[in-house]
Amino acid sequence: MSTFDSLRYFNYRLWFAGALVANVGTWMQRVAQDWLVLTVLTSESGVAVGVTTALQFAPVLVLSAWAGLLADRVDRRKLLVATQVGQGVLAAGLGVLVLGGHAQLWHVYLFAGLLGCVSAIDAPVRQTFVAELVPPEKLSNAVGLNSASFNAARLIGPGVAGLLIAWVGPGWVFIINAVTFGATILALTGMRGRELRSMPSAPRAKGQIRDGIRYVRNRSDILVIMVVVGVVSTFGLNFQLTSALMARTEFGKGAGEYGILGSVLAIGSLTGALLAARRERPRVRLVIGSAFAFGITTGVMALMPTYVSFAIACIPVGLASLTMMTAANATIQMTTEPAMRGRVMALYMIVFLGATPVGSPIVGWVGEELGARWSIGIGSISALLVSAGAALWARRAWDVQVRYHLSRPHLEVLHPAQVEGVRESAARRVGAQDAADRASAA
Image (cartoon, rainbow, N blue to C red; front, side, top):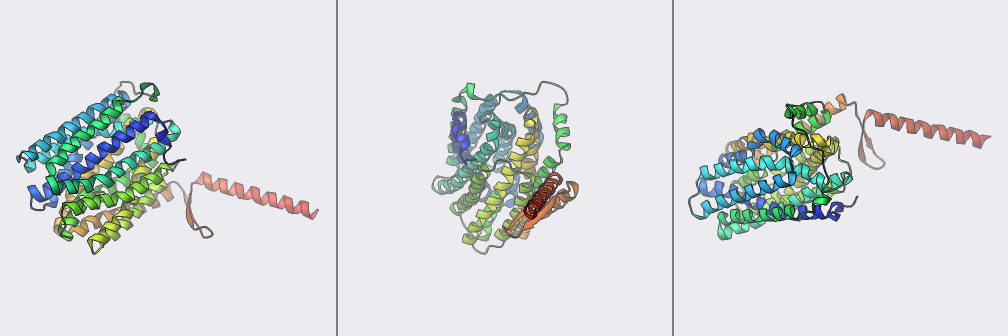
């Protein structure tokens, strides 16, 4: 599969371009918001930054299941237009407050919570809408390219935000972000309706959210993915907070250097996304393995003695985290019934994004009490424990076998059916060789 296969489709090209512009603005706002809280509205309070992040993601816990049901029922394109307008209005409102000199900490908390409400509705719809833009066999590629767009924006956005904060202040960053949502709206309204792929819709009935929960509960593979991603997300995927603490308190750097850390992290993430786009069928083992790699790389990053070495260590962290996230997303989407996909992805987003309100204040407190390095260390330890535990459970529950090949060094993970297939193949080869030997002897 070619890395950019999905870009051959007109509607997906529009979506990719519009999302790239909007994602740049989103990353700019995230950096500006955290820097505003950390340096302007508080005296370098990691807890305040953690609370802001938590409020932005807390609505996912309440609204995502309902939003997933919406994604299975209504016109996804129209719903996405509405969410983009809502996010743009909120970004503009916060920007006006900051530029007018009226912004207070509670204002940021309020806007973070409102933005979280809109984003909670947007997330499952955005995740499932991509299935309308490309054929089913290209879905994994499209998911990988979506991540590439998000992380290309992450490569650009934080650095630009850092420079703009230093030049004109965070208020203008919020205004610019509001404008960027127009790119996604134009892309959505400009799509060719006849080329959108019709997806099954869930009829109105009672207990549909419970049906989604029941479906996930009966899928041990999805449960393993959710547990691993949930733990890593709770304690490890808090880069906005941990990078701000490291840049400010450990290395004594300013907004520009903080923004650069986000961009360097995105180098690894973008690499992981492009590799994911070439992967035809990701599997659960890739989620577990990349979570373990994340634990190792973040542990190394936490020990880096200088700003430059810390920044360089961000690259493998970005690669491991993005590989885990894209593998989890694509595996769930590709193995879930289309009519159930919105609700299942909503439950996944609850685990993935909803873990942040729990983890961010804890990580912020650890950073204040034990030091910035431990705010990263707690994520490293958690990732190592949950990935090792998931691997051991899977080996026992699914009876998988792990083999290491010395001739061409690599790990091979086989399910029982695959093991039996390997044995049958070997038996056929032995039988064929015996027959050849007998014929030769004769």
